[in-house]
Image (spheres, rainbow, N blue to C red):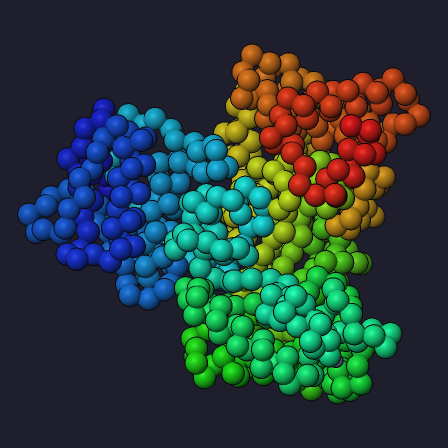
Length: 545
Ligand SMILES: [Zn+2]
Ligand SMILES: [Zn+2]
């Protein structure tokens, strides 16, 4: 059934946004967002009013009291009802409505697609939304630095401080033994708090987790953090990012008792969780299953307020878990962990960290992995992309797609990519789409790609680079008159030039040409290509740029 009165027509409207009397802040916020974006798309300003029985044409907003992120919206005669099953649900609902009904897309923090719509009639519609994963953290620099973009794309977590209540709510902290008990405060007076390695207590390692004073200090530090930042659900207590674990007799004994380093870590974190539960019964304590603690322990279970964050650091990132010999172990490990914990999350990786600039053909694998996580009842995801600088292969596209798949992994990833590429690369889109497909098709059952892959990886072939160059050249030519588009295309071209310049050392002319073209792109677009970290400069050092 269709309403005979348009929601808007040529900038005019008879509709209002109707909110409950004394509406909670989330509903008021959602109403303003809806009003703002409908105005931008149509030129029509829908007034926001408290509910009144005489109102005739309404978009009704409402929300339950819970923290649920679920929502539904549906047409009811000439009206629309948008309902959040919790406060965050109504906010998610608005963005979903704007995306699906009006075609508004928040592609990157700088690029929002808002179509100009002359008239819009409410048709029969019913839609429900429910996130596939409770924790959703997109670890790309643009997402990290732009909480509002996260909010629009329903990302809800950060590893950093955030003052955006509707963007970041779930997990606080990572690798934080060093903050909970710092070397600066304790190493000189209490070296016994820190790892024993080859007979010596060392800095830049882990904590001695069997020392009872370490437990007390960690608990007190954590309580301070929770009191200072009370809005999060999960607070991190996890190993530092190194393999220098404690080798003292007591730690070694607990490791043996519980079947490995993860057993010692969980034994410690369980005790922290017990102490925290007395004061903060609603809070959860998160910890890593990472590198030397990756495999599930034996003879011990996680407390019901402990969350395990399992890391796929050693995996091949261009394959799912069932079709790659490197990866089958991760599914097995996850199954073992799921037997001893109620809350299991995953920290996954999606780029080559030695060469952010080189193509990483993993879009289809991403979707497959996310579906596996959903099947295994994983409750939260962090996807680590290029967090160190804005540039990388298809950073904008991959960042957006990760957000979409975190909400619903059962979407066709190529269709999502097609939507983004059409919107973002306009006239050059057909060529960028060809390059995207060519790149994804490089993945074979025999090619594998660890997170520290380099330009010699077998997914890169001479034939691939030759074909890519031809496609990119067409994209470059068609984008020349549009400075915004040509900059976007240049960022894609940089992937190919990088490979050509690194791989074809034997063909000196083409190598130098590619290097010069890449050098020009980097100079012109220096903000995008700015370097944050040694890994990024590594690629440039190889090229002598
Ligand atoms: Zn120890
Ligand atoms: Zn593989």
